Length: 318
Ligand code: PMV
Image (cartoon, rainbow, N blue to C red; front, side, top):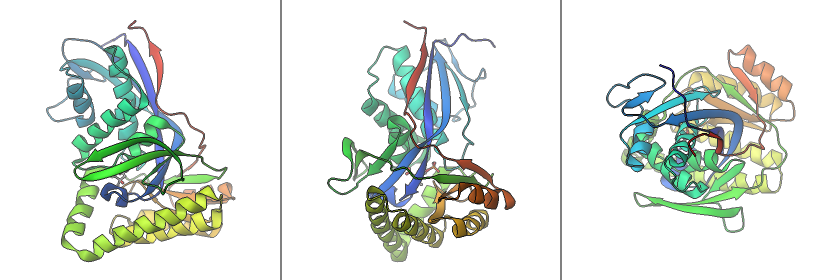
């Protein structure tokens, strides 16, 4: 099926530097947009198509949520990405954010970043069953984003409340630091891992204590990032990884990449929901880190952090 799509938008992926999983429970966290983008094209039509096909019932929950939010039941959507999917790098948040901008542009609605961030967060919540606005706010805003950081650390963007939790979203300056991502090649959908942590936390006081401790480590790391102190930030990242492992969201492949990169890094940890997906290392020796990742079967990506958030690429609907 050939379609002349009317609106095209794109949004970047992200890496979580500190605080995944604990952020779902309102703890502090920080993420940075990465220069790999998801491109979404939309046009009006009289049915619902994704990449030229009618989706099965229940498939594409992020897309359905955004359609529902915009009171539309028919749409032709095309999505493409340079992000590996289910990799902990925010492919679903980038899809939600870019789709929200594309649909809202197509229908002449408000397209300010706060509106896009809120709508794409609702899509993540709908698809995952539970989520934080960290991924969607970062993919929407671009650059560095902190949630629930202390007073004076970052500039306020918006506040999001959901299910008794409040997240204060701030933009932060990202110092000149080099991160390398290592992708394990293992697909690990976010929803089931978030649910596993929820059950663990509900039934076990120890899990709740780990989540509290991850919040404290994220605060220490954020302050180190503000001081451009790579030693202390790296230390916080490695501690964060250990706590995530105890929480049961790491896996052998991630631990292998983290351990292999530590000798050349200030710190190293899994990033995103875990269970596969990706890890990140903060380093001054990116080539050595890339080699260590490749030798263990991972795919290295050197991160460029000065990345623009969601943006309109083309609009022929006007
Ligand atoms: O794996 P990703 O890219 O979907 O990141 C998930 C981050 C979590 O903290 C585990 C969930 C969330 O919504 O914040």
